[in-house]
Image 1 (cartoon, rainbow, N blue to C red):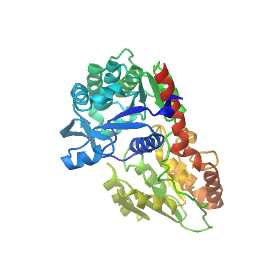
Image 2: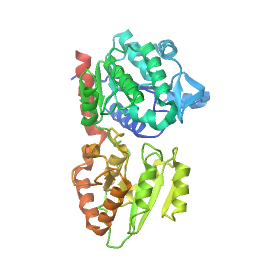
Image 3: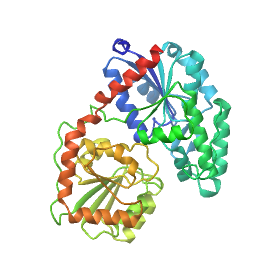
Image 4: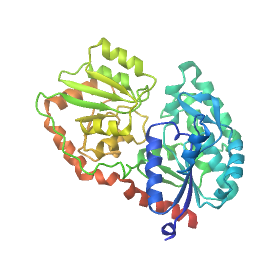
Length: 416
């Protein structure tokens, strides 16, 4: 098969350099697995300003920072220069990409737009990964009074470079505001410009089809790096009346719903301790709330992955309580790698981890989450039951397993 001879693959992403989170983790795992299988991988990404020494160090790993804004950032995320500037820079600086086999595009910003446009210009197959719910992301980042105008401006900018043949109208489903409808318009038209679309979950695939993505959409779940994967995982257990050790390692932000979960935790009757890893817009607010209510919650901020992985391994329960936002939830498979049971309230997340390995609250409300946690503490034997299920399935999340699907996808689209 063609991919055994080694493909040349160019990744494009606006969410990679200088960031943490699911997109970066997924890209890293796939890059390592593809290179291990003999493929050449370049990554082009937006980033914050760097000196020549830092850029050279990245280049040694075939990671390259595209022209990026020095003073303008989107929250804590770097922003690229205009797509046409990036295209011109790429062709001048890295003319070898004209001979690449496939352009693999992540996200929908300037760097990603440049990757799609250049792929069509060079007649190279393009695969677009639709990672996230930008309709919800924009609403959580932008203050209430500015959401509509920002969404309109983002649409306007996007349509300068990629044609908008499909308009999503306001409805009673997911596009229930003008701003959300505009963001769905952007996502759908971005996906339709690629030759093939990937999503990490079937539930997100169905939503994209509902709003008008016409290109073939395949599901490729995110994976866990083989190099970082723990060789062994022990069954976690919780004795009656023992302190439940909870870990949070998502962003401490509105879209991840840290504050509703803290309100839930403040209502539980059993003993608990929660360690919070990561930062975000609600970090200081969450700290103040925890202190005010004398909660057993420790905030560690951003830490090195080895320290985080040790903390996950020491926990009884991993939580991800976003609702109608996450399309996959890397937090959940990071927990699965260590056989740690998970807690969530979004039914869509049932697709990510095996049946019998999770606790799901009846609704997204704080009262419902508190009730589910109380019930778990009264039935502590559930922890070991769920952990055993995690152990049975944990190797399914390895990048070396899931990369076989991606290689076949690339091989098929190259041959078309």
